[in-house]
Length: 221
Image 1: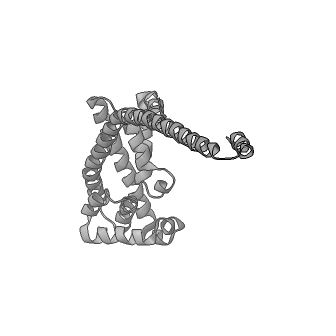
Image 2: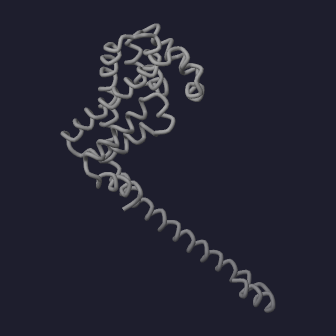
């Protein structure tokens, strides 16, 4: 069993509630303003979702991830309502990129609640848009509706891709392992052929050399 299988098996060995909790935590961290810098959200979500093996489990995972994404958006919205325009000058926003904040606020001004929906598919911007919506005074019910509409397909896509990848990982790894054996065997054969050719050439040279040089050549081999 290789590294891919070992990693998946270690996660799959956890109780399902813990796997779901991990998926929720990674998603919440990815969508909450600032935490995405610390938590590798999408990667963690994909790893957790790769353990899905049944349709029912996938549906539960999808629901949990969707709710966690909406919760993350809500926290970002409340932060934006609390700090308003001052948020742009904070160290956190500067670290995430003020240009990204400007993109998020521009989206809110042009599209309103639709910006929350579309931003779900844009890394970094999706973490900033709910806060920008709170700063702009977008009504919270509109944010929640847009967040659900964006989070549901986003979660479905990630869970589906991860589940398919988890199922295919072992097959891919087995093929890679078989190929490695063939590669190793070919390398050994190449080394043996090289040594035989080298030794044959050395013997031919030795036949044409004086006895003293022949003895030195044999010692070198």
